[in-house]
Amino acid sequence: MVWSSKESEITPRSTATVTRFLYRLYEGSGLDTDLIFKRSEIDIQQFDDPLYRIPHDKLMRMWEIAAELSGDPNFSLHLARDVPNVLPLNTAGYLAMSSRNLREMLESLKRYMKILSDVGHLRIKESDNLANVTIDFSGGKNSNRQHSDFWQAFFYRMINANIGGEMPLIEVGFRHDKPQDTSAYTEYFHCELKFGQPENYFLFPRVYLDYQLISADPSIHKIHEQQATKQLHELTEKGILNKVKRLIFESLPAENVELKDISESLNLTPRTVQRHLADEGTTFKKLADEARKEYTISEIENTDLAIAEIAYQLGYRDLSSFYRAFKRWTGKTPINYREEFLKGD
Image 1 (tube, rainbow, N blue to C red):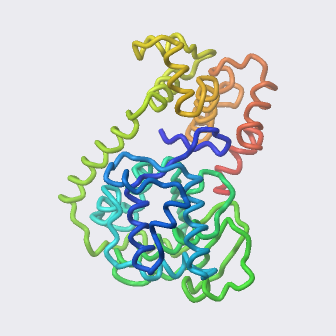
Image 2: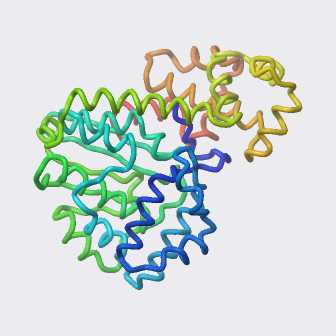
């Protein structure tokens, strides 16, 4: 279960492994990396801890400072262009590279995205002839051009490196507004560009999903998958916050999820649980609300249950109250959300 609510007040974080990777890229570009990370308030001494997670707002500040020091408005695109063809990020990266084909690579990244970021999101949609891949690390926050552009360009570079050639793109979408000069984007992607989109995405011929990767190795893939599963479990279990989230979600559907019941499962007092959650920047009430949201969205997307039945399972006796809660969570009605999801919007 990936908790990536757009309205979540929990501070989203990304793995130190990815940030260490960026540190080396900045350094290779001739930037003052120590100054960038000092101004961003990121502790580079923690980089050796594979489970260390860096707050999302600090990462966004890091990108802005790096672009400012570079003096290049297209800094992130140029940085992605210069990334070496060998692109290991961490266990998830190695797992992706040893996949049989592009489809399995994308599915592996989707399954283990949380190893890279708390808010990482990847979705694959296929039609008769087209494939649409959405990838985003913003967690629903306002789009940061430098951050967004790098991951779009890097991801495309990674695909090309792993299929051993350039995959032709039909269209690329960006969440951020259109820059005054888009020539660097055209030079990099060679396709139609769309800005101010709801999500970052790539549109390309579906046939490329079946392209075998040049480093495909089923036996190695299995080893990396075992390691990725273990690492994902360690991340999920780290800290009381994730344990409470997991227990709340496992309690659903239910009319009420009580703090005392969750505390008993952890062999802690309710006051202790509340204190630890406060230390991690949230409350039991917020986590319970987020769990109900995630459960509801999962039921709407993955089942044919009637909206009224889903509401009843969660303890809503008044359907209008359920609709108000869902509108607060997503900005849409449950019916509109399901219709748009089924259409692939």
